Picture 1 (spheres, rainbow, N blue to C red):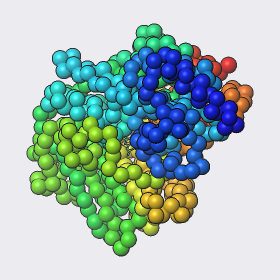
Picture 2 (cartoon, protein in one colour):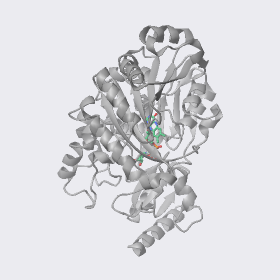
Picture 3 (tube, helix red, strand yellow):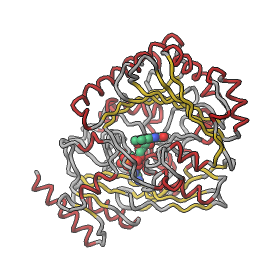
Picture 4 (cartoon, rainbow, N blue to C red):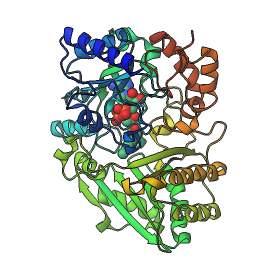
Length: 508
Ligand code: FDA
């Protein structure tokens, strides 16, 4: 009942106040809406039917964070943790089943300390990738971090789920470069790598955010890069057969290039005239000359010329790919625009035939506004063992596909139509992608794959919850790593304090 919710919120706020935590908002506070909306990246979760938190707390220290967890538990409020707010399904600031809850928002825990001598950094989990990249770039022109491409993503979420980026073919995922971490567990205890134990330390590096406790900070390995690297974005427009031919050939090139090369495909859906457009986005840890000599050999059909290529520092290239103006804009936490979106993902193990590619390109160009992104794997991604971290999509994966539809406020009435189109595209792609299980990337969260049901506080019988998860989203995201995640969960959070629609269920 709302009276009961108000009582919980008031007990929560007096608990915080007694313990000296002053930075929080209740629904009646003037700051509540701005604070809640500041990190909402998907406008689907601003609609009136979405349950809003009973309070939002913004810890300014590790001690505030411990108290926020304990006060929420004392007031019988569920907890959602938010770093950058990029969750595709809004899991960092919503709950299913209308359970009263608080959001612990880490946006003020965003300090990054770089040690260029040891090539490591300690970064608080509320920092964004952009804030991290900026700090690394300031400290040295020859160091970098291997993470994702969008600068406003939070380290709390992206590293918890893996973190694929332009350097991953050379240096692996963000999660592959974690050396240590500070985790605040459900009892408010502060644990590091040795005190949390190897199973939990393994689980937090790719097993998905929101299941284990709150990561307060990550110790990360920085990687060496040349003073200048090469980047390019090459647009091509033409008839369906021509574009399909390029993508068909790319499948053989992208995953097999030297590790220093990242070459991805960006395909906007719903072309209005007869022609189709795509972009090839590339980053090379090398010179223009090296880029030209490799690409003219392996991908002559693309027709790359020297004028397509630019040399710059790694951090400058990162700002370009993040689509922000300058390097210092990398640390701006507010993106320009947000829209309503829905995404899904797939993995491809065998090249799609040229004939099928023509049909796929035709299907995509007839769709609504959206994008398809093909990210090349291979290189280090294939050399890291599939059980080294919970992220299982390693050797044998050629590339990932991310499908997204997006729309604006004025098109809100057609939202269902767009989502239904995306689901039918996903069905249409079935013969061409991984199977048994069909893979998906946990950072491209997709509740269509299945969801926990916590109407019973522990999700019914825990064996049932586990079996349901393992046969649907659990297998898609984690394949054979799922069982070890369940055992890590049972160790760190046996009473399931940190749960969400796709959190790992404990056994009890
Ligand atoms: P958010 O705050 O929403 O958290 C996501 C999940 O992690 C939630 O379940 C949350 O509770 C939990 N969580 C957050 N902070 C935590 C903490 N400190 N401790 C424990 N749990 C925590 N991915 C990628 O790999 N490469 C890429 O290039 C991109 N690009 C990209 C672009 C755009 C525009 C979007 C919207 C998303 C991506 N992603 C991506 C996906 C992204 O990695 C994924 O959405 C991350 O979970 C986002 O992390 P945030 O902290 O921003 O999200």
